[in-house]
Image (cartoon, rainbow, N blue to C red):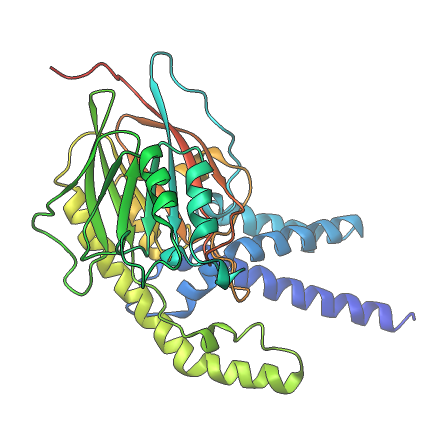
Length: 371
């Protein structure tokens, strides 16, 4: 025991230092252009988990009165805090400014209103969720046509009419999978140059009027990883050393290449979105399926362009919005700029889709209508 204990401590130190190094690399991975390197971008995806592991390991070292390895973990967290903060926020809900107008907005990749938990149930459960979610504005992704019975399974006219009665204003084009339901007047606007996206339709621009005051809204569905269901099961298929080796081999092949391309494509998508948004004035919300996480390269581009992240400014701790195949990542985002104050953002537990919805409450400042 006298010999084993120091050996175990040495192994523990080595593993701890490896964890600290990977955490630090992930913290700064979003500053590396994915055009040149892919691994740092991939590490950013698991940054919240690395941060939690680093914190736990540091505490264990402190409890065992090993100050140096414990302190090094804390140094890593402090050094990477500019990136760790958005991924693992320490914030709390805000109060609405006096005299402001508050409203709620829900963003949800609805997966064509399918029900993954009960496929035979059709769209019933998803639509009933939308009916009862309480949001003033609903931004949906992956929904092409409310009236297409092939896309939307078993949606009764009565239930659709109830939804439209609750949200009398609907907007969206049949040429995209982005739709908005609203209790306030909303119109789809023509996207002028630069845009729409050259490679695929990745956003739509809407104009709302909330008590007479305009609010710009961009509903987005940025490029995905394009992984097949089989490829997404690379983690859940690990049950033994042999299956682990198979999953690693598969990851090094098609999965890695697809992810590399998706990181690069999202960077181009976000450049085009930012260029278009620069032509807009006044309060603006950009929300939807961003397909990338806080502190990623694409996320940093949005922040550097003057947008703020509503979740990181009002919430405590990390979250995840994708919920399938153990890819538990926070890839649905709500950005804003202008005379808006985020009051609260919550992830809802509705599970018909492979994405959880986010609902946000905002205050619109200086709400006296312009003359």
